[in-house]
View 1: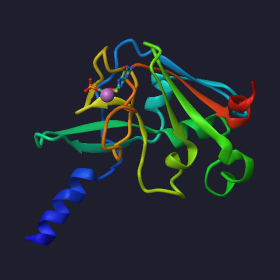
View 2 (view 1 turned 90 degrees about the vertical axis):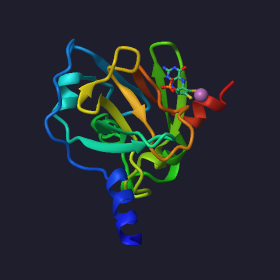
View 3 (view 1 turned 60 degrees about the horizontal axis):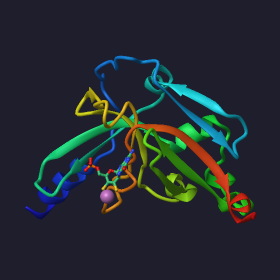
View 4 (view 1 turned 180 degrees about the vertical axis):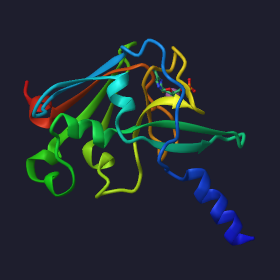
Amino acid sequence: MRIFAIALFASLLALAQNPGLAPVRGSEATITISGAVEKSVTISMTDLSNMPHRSVSIRDRTGMVTKFDGVPLQSLLELAGLHFGNGLKGDRLAAFLLVEAADDYRVVIALPELDSSMTDDVVLLASHRDGQPLSPSEGPFQIIVPQDKKRSRWVRQVKALRVLHADFALEE
Ligand SMILES: Nc1nc2c(c(=O)[nH]1)N[C@H]1C(S)=C(S)[C@@H](COP(=O)(O)O)O[C@H]1N2
Ligand SMILES: [Mo]
C-alpha cells in the first residue's frame, strides 16, 4: 500500500519525454532571450517544438491533475550561450533571470534554480496544457515552477527572458 502510494505520487510528479502535442495556431509567436548572454536569441513556437520537451503533472488542492509540456528554461538559456553545471560558478553566480510578461508582470529566478546539476526540480517554459496549446490568457508561453508552493512565478504570456547581473542592479 505504501509502495503503491509512493509510486502513484512519483508518477504524478514524473517528468517524462513528451508524446505528440496538438499544433499551436499562430505559431509565429516568439520570445526573446537577451541581456548578459553570449548572444541574444529569438525563439519561435516552431523552434520550441523542435527542442527536447519535458512534461510535469501538477495536482492542485482539489486533487485535479494538470499536465504541462514545455522546454526546461536551462535548455533555452543554453541556446543563448549561458553556462550551467561546472560553468555556473564564480562571478556568473551573481547573474539572475528576469522573466517579463505581456502585462509587464516580472519575476526573478536565480540561475541555480534552473541548473540540473544543482537540483532535480525543473522549471519549464510551457506551451501546452493537457496536450492542448495554452489559452490566449495563459500563453502562448507560460513559466511553470512545480516546486513553488504558490504560483506567483508561474508567469503567463511570457514575452522575454532577460539575464541580468547584480553589478548592473547595484549601479546607481
Ligand atoms: N503575466 C502574469 N502572470 C502571472 C500574474 C500576473 O499578474 N501576470 N500573476 C501571478 C500570480 S501572483 C499568481 S498567484 C498566478 C495566478 O494564476 P491563476 O490566475 O492561473 O490562478 O499567476 C501568476 N502569473
Ligand atoms: Mo498571486
